[in-house]
Amino acid sequence: MPRLSPFGYRFVIAVLLLLGDSTHRLCFAGATKPAAAPIQVQAVGCIGMTVSDLDRSVDFYARALSFEKVAELEVAGNAYEQLAGIFGVRSRTARLALGSECLELSEYLAPRGRPAPVDARSNDRWFQHVAIVVTDMDRAYQRLRQAKVEHASTGPQRLPDWNPSAGGIQAFYFRDPDRHVLEVLQFPSGKGDPRWHPRDGKPDRLFLGIDHTAIVVGDTEASLSFYRDALGMEIKGNSENWGTEQEHLNNVFGARLRITTLRSGRGPGIELLEYLAPRDGRPMPSDERANDLIHWQTTLLTNDLERAMDWVRTRRPPLVSVGLVTLPDARLGFSRAFLARDPDGHVMLFANAETNFSKR
Image 1 (cartoon, one colour):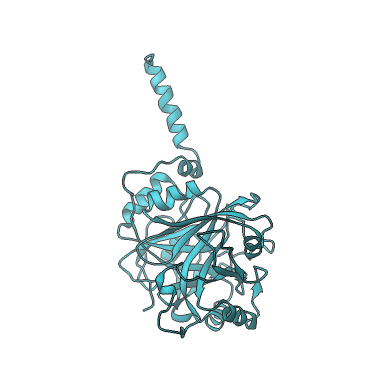
Image 2: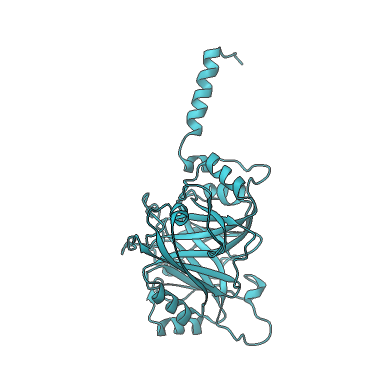
């Protein structure tokens, strides 16, 4: 091999630096699995979403889905502005519990954000939902019809038995009052976590808890570089789904999905939905903010926020917060946190893990 001159070495180094300064998506897509995860996520906590009318949303989730409000607070001030990355924030947040999992609904009193696009589809890459496990799909569907929900699926779908990973699962997509997509999900015997299969005869609850939150991604491998390789989450399931049932579930003609489920030690899973077809889903808007009604955020609990922040600054998934923020108290369930985006722009709330996000 010919030796390089000093100028040649400088040129090669400059090219490598330029390549390293490419977009965060390319960095993730090209990353290889490190020997040890730089960050260890101990648990997935509450799944958050922005709503336009908190009282209306709390009533809907309690009445239609049996969530219980366990906390409510109003916040304002510099620390919350730094966390949300929005000046002049005043917001109300309610924590809702179902089983061992929780949702956090936030209404921004100031400044108000934008509504969701009326033509949003399930393959757009800002799409996110939570999957709520039910014990009886027929009863759950009737309950939702009585609540007059807007359909996102044409109706409940039973996934076909030819698909060994998903066969027998029943699912239905619908919308809440702000048009966030939600899913009810029933697992057949032998699938899903054992806690979704009550043992003592007929279960006394129709809605059991949140199995996972699902996000649409553009490149599964790039997302795995983030969630698995960098955050230490483990792959717990994967499948490739297509056919008329999947099309009617997602309400996307020709839908063919690569589905990968990741989990940490506790809490809901994170399910990656890559649409292999059609590939016309729109990217996350570059100006999406926490007060917009398409905003979701998933809480990731870690024991070492400083290390997480150092990693974020090194690998450069875009920060939403101004940095690692110390809050004046722990009324939100944590005292230190920051918001950052994954390779597709979905927002993750990194928070100190000493606080239990389950129902208190």
